Image 1 (cartoon, rainbow, N blue to C red):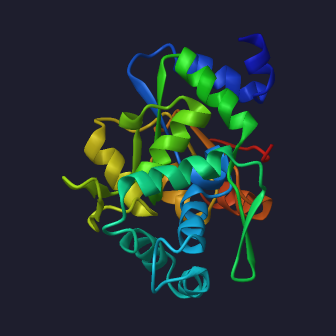
Image 2: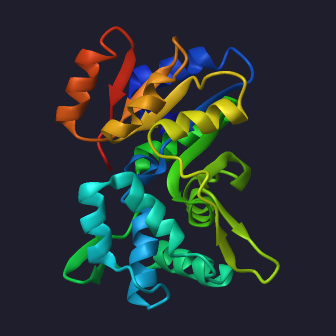
Length: 249
């Protein structure tokens, strides 16, 4: 336990120990570029495109859509998986997790292979041993999110809330568009699943502000994104609150 604590900023360790004195509290973290260095949803989509498992929407199409409407792009990545065999999605996800490659080369782009943030691994372990349940809320597809959260962080599937995909009787993906947890939708998921607010949240992008702002008043907010955005958020929203930044590692 001492070695785990040594990987975590001292003030965060102290605050977790303080929070752990109250029972039935939980943490809610973003996944991509927060728990992970990289994006599992994008990597899975890229490999599906490269292996010709999805049609009529390529990586360049995704990049173009991201520039004009990020939320629509996230929905589209889920939509193109409709009728995909579950075993194919699972196989692609495991390939990404276990490859020694650093990137996926596709359509002139290099898409990073996501790896765990070592500091966040230590924080998840410490939270679990402190009886603060760790949950993940992500716009990446639920199947891939569940696999990588278990592989890298030991987080159970029941604690992972990703973009909604159902599995039909033929073991094929059927997409549902009533839930892609992005921006405010992350908070809506937490309001549905939990009675109280999380005592620890973490995100990396400006649209994670909704999640961070939903943190219990005495809780911790953690930033893994750009330093410039951290400073802006700190000054505008969290000046007098427990708001910390950690670097990817």
